[in-house]
Length: 250
Image 1 (cartoon, rainbow, N blue to C red):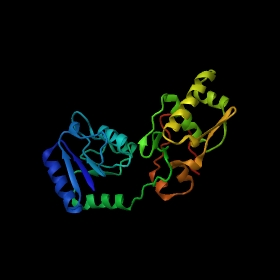
Image 2: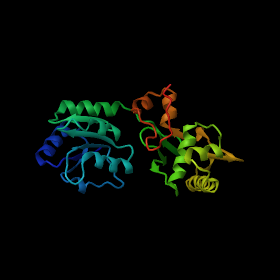
Image 3: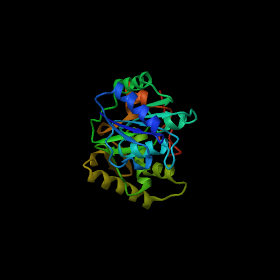
Image 4: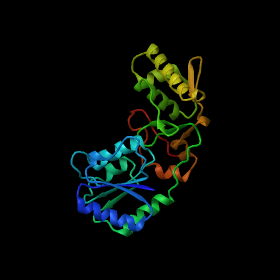
């Protein structure tokens, strides 16, 4: 297990490392006093203990950067301040510890992580609806050519396989009619999925299109199946970057 430790106060960093080593003696530790020096791109850490109040890049910002390249990273914030709890959960932190930390607190958090079983991907595409909407292919973010293409895909995911008329899509995305642009977005989705070998996920016929829900892993779908791991992941936020989604929790 690879553990990242970041704190701009050297004494606190040493104390954190010593406590962690007693709880997780077999782990490999990587500690940084300067958050700007942390290797963010393609990081392969399993767990990150991050201070929040740090100059240059605070812990919340660092967590977002780390999780953007490693969505499965488990983040535990360690801070002397309680004002950041809400922000911490917005980036789906696994834990929030108040300083001074001790072995018992760290063990409790690590036990939670070990007992938590993340949703295991079984399909080529993984869709995350809780928090910000994101699409991953084999664990890596899927990039569409147009920002609106991603929103079209999100709307189809939200409709859970129901066939949607292009006029309905147009009404959701814009107040005015933009049929030619919508055709470009649909073409972009088709091209993007074809490039990663997932063209069968998106189905287009005549003036309708839909998602084959059997071809994607989706946290929201698992939640509605009462998957306990998915239920635990949900914190009341669903596709928060869009204005139209309404998540039915029943």
